[in-house]
Image 1 (tube, one colour):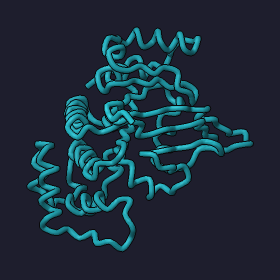
Image 2 (spheres, helix red, strand yellow):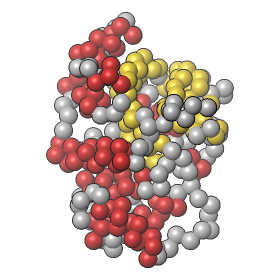
Image 3 (cartoon, one colour):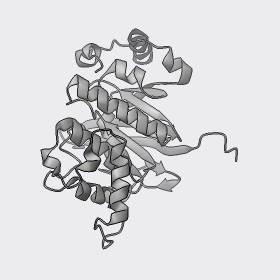
Image 4 (cartoon, rainbow, N blue to C red):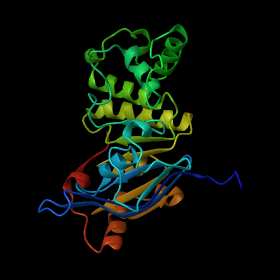
Length: 276
């Protein structure tokens, strides 16, 4: 095998997801997705509401399995039907809301201790010891927010931006196979969102992480990552990478969508959204 060629970290094969099947509320959220995410890919995923973006991330995270016949492979392991806590061995995730993914009534170091134990067998000690505390301080110091000096602070006392930055460290501290970012700056003010995105990009580049980031922001999708995917009605309709992606402007992306789907991109929330 040529080790100079990036290998797939994630493979999705014939992924379909139907909610409320057979009812008047039936929703076909994912419609036959095939995707290979290579080692070191940083993929921005964009699309209108209902395109299936967050559903795809939930499926990779093991929140629910695909319909029969679909397969989810991470680092060569078939994780299709593993429960969500087992997916945590492979996946780190940061949610849209800063309050999700952290426990407000626990300290920073207690939250981080839980993070390093995710996906491990129950019964292992989660206590904070000196070695682990130094590890936490080192990781937090990269944020340059002073959180490494506040390990005993309750997470509920942190600002939204600080909690989201902490969530980012918690999601990456154990070097997961893939990092999932689900509109993780959407609820932050523009200045804080820009700071969190700068942290995100720095950590991904420093650790050569593989990441998938859902965003409603076309300019952000073009600015970050080496690859851009557009989704529509549960399908992948545009997949652009490398130099081709770097040369695109928003209008080029809209035109690519129109060519792929035969219809105009009309989601004002995406079209009007500006980067932080």
